[in-house]
Length: 65
Length: 217
Image (cartoon, rainbow over the protein chains, first blue to last red):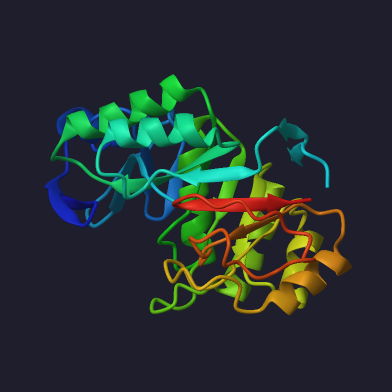
């Protein structure tokens, strides 16, 4: 059972929530998250259940024009 | 022309927006910010899980230290939905309602998608964003964006990175004439040489720096 994070497969954690996934991945701070193309507000990660095949985007600030 | 630029009620003494990409080092970027004294810094988002954690943190710290107004963009988005999602993530990261809205319709010229940008602007304004849409000088497109609630427009001079200068100076001039009050920030394709820019009488102040946009109001 796995999810797609930034285009790469990762194991789905237990419990299957976005919060647990982020604990497992420990992305560098700061970051923001979307699940299946929908923005997920910080503070709601515990409530965001994820399932096999879900697409998670984790983004960070970077230089741009 | 007034010296002060006002965008969504926020006043700036500079009319220059400075991009933060393609600098060889953080210190060079920091020096450019000090030298240019821009109204805003444009920044972006990228997907990353691993790699150089230090470089991302260093960039974040640099942004905070400059204490400049940050203008996040939706670069790389090819649909309205993707742009809305990116804008929402940027708002949470940078704690600002400002967003430079980019929806690209052609991956060769990076020309804005007029349909996508209008669709995204309508949604973002309803979500409380202060939208600065990257667009062309097309009057119908610009009027639809103003109808959506955009109080600033960012028409291109020419395709991104070409440095051609205004391809359609007459169109830009007519946009200025038909929408005399809205701030126009000419973005992309600006010619690097100050002296060689056409457009006398366009009502667009000519001030150029690397990776920059210039505003007229």
